Length: 44
Image (cartoon, rainbow, N blue to C red; front, side):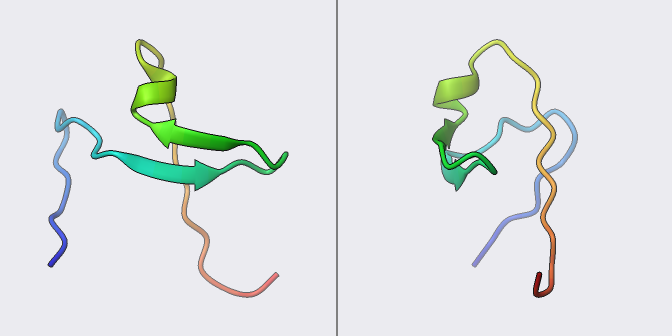
């Protein structure tokens, strides 16, 4: 079961791939920085 994040909640540990092929572990790789994560649904 997933849980909805509310404003001010810490981001859970999550690993994503960037558009340039790097892998980021959020929030560990972005400590002290802001991030915007956008999820796209569909086929490119």
